[in-house]
Length: 293
Image 1: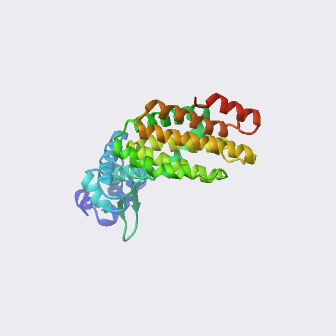
Image 2 (image 1 turned 30 degrees about the vertical axis):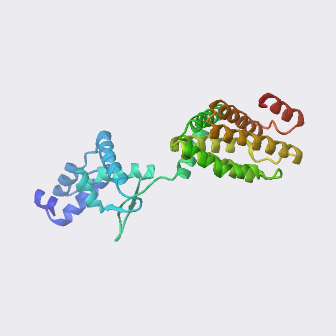
Image 3 (image 1 turned 45 degrees about the vertical axis):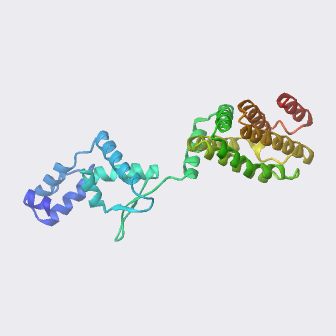
């Protein structure tokens, strides 16, 4: 009714004018004069900078609100942002794509805070990396560098926390069955990775590592291919020894040992992913090139 009063028209003309405004590309010729006046006056498209500013404000509101809680109705949000309805809606679409906002329509609708999941980010980024045709050579280098630096930092971490982590993990590796499946090995790898990243407060490193590892799994079939039983036992044995040396280096605060073991351990995974574990000479070559003296 505010617009109707301003333009001296009835509520029906206001509703038609607002409908034309919401679809701002619609032609206004042929509409009744007062409706055309409303639609034309309101149909200026918001600029990118206006939308970006509104999105930044709305993002701040969403991130300051617990996941799943209501920010308010659409009118509430428009009032908080001080923008037009179309600008608010376009800003909301941007945030929905980011995963930080959910918009629900209807009687119990409104704008709700949301949080993007790590799995969602991993999936989206991996898909984008595939469209770029990136090489696993470079993503593997990044993952290896991240793990090495994480172990370097872990070896220098606060002693009580580092020793507690080592005490928790060491028995799991010591008791690992030589016949452990690749799935069991991978789960233990992920458990240690999570513990190390928690020790060094490395949530960002964890995210990048997960993305690169997921991309490598998609592109390198060697990660999941079954090896000959003897070759698999060799892989498990070398991997187990490398992990125990990593943990020992962390426990002793020995950066050189932790980093050297990390380089060796990563080479075993890279070798498997790249198919180097498919034949006996290759296995012996990987062991010889990366054995710890």
